Length: 128
Image 1 (cartoon, rainbow, N blue to C red):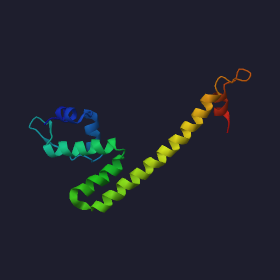
Image 2 (cartoon, rainbow, N blue to C red):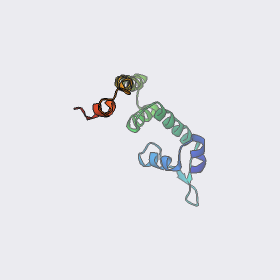
Image 3 (spheres, one colour):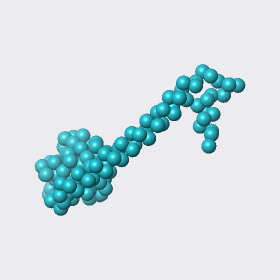
Image 4 (spheres, rainbow, N blue to C red):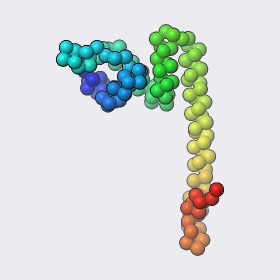
């Protein structure tokens, strides 16, 4: 299958596929006699794996590690550890976002209470 068909089936751009090849997440595909990339069903499956892992928030380096484990170079416990680290990191990010949300909520509640034509939100952004 050509790169355009692969892109369409995985809903990524051709440029993304080429980038994943450069980052060695995808193996270099076979080439047709005319020099076109010729992707196999295994390439499609691997790209779907990459796309799904990205959707779950894994970085390209983490995906590379997961792909190596997927290829039989590791154990399920290692995959679980990577997933748990990602889940912990996401929990930290969620907590940080909740704190930001609380501050913004408090600031927006102060709107309408302008003092001498100064906005409380803008004033708070100037504070150290």
